[in-house]
Length: 332
Image (tube, rainbow, N blue to C red):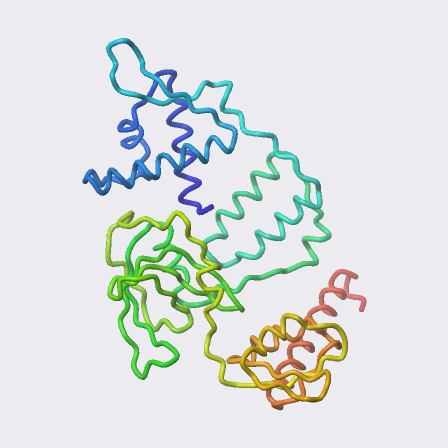
């Protein structure tokens, strides 16, 4: 859930708890600024859809919202929460589960999700939940979100603003300007993609962030479009295959190496048992995929791919040794 949505739900909850009277939807709309100021027919319809979704979200959290009128002469339906019904369910997590939440927050260092994930972690700690600091200290997960356009597109997704950017596709001789209503971001095979509605081609389109050139410009006010209710970002990009022109030959010594075999599609495979040919378009990402298999697999060619994996494994070993030395007070 995005930080802006969390803030809106919290403000709605506070608004409903602020009085024992029933509050009309219009008064709620004015009080909760996150619903926007667009009073047009389209803006009103957008508010109504958002308000209904927010009420459903609060009910799922255990908040019972009452509907009614304040008196015989009041024809306007309103909403309120009885004080006793606003208690959220207790958070019951084991130490291992709490630790997993702590590890998850580490994934988003440097991205806009960091403040929201840190906030969630603080709330868990405030609720008295403990985490295994030993485990947290030894694990440094990281989800790369270092594309220059990431933060701007994430902000546009959250605010529902239209954007414009210069994009060079894999088969484009020249970059072209694209105008998009961004629905969401998803990571797939170590790449980030934005899924949205292309305003020029008038259909759903997928763009890889690493192919965006220059600045991403905001071209509209917030809240000008709605995301499809049945949006499934990973389903949208499930069959999207980035161009990968280079091929590496790998020997599988043990196991199935399922993750690597997924990169063999469309390639003629060696006849020798245990050998596979895989596609790749980036040496660093290939090394990141191969390194976790350790001695179970071996890159045979090309030489630069083999060396990239060796360098990756060496770096991991040196990092592990440094952490062990630091933990032992300088003794290796």
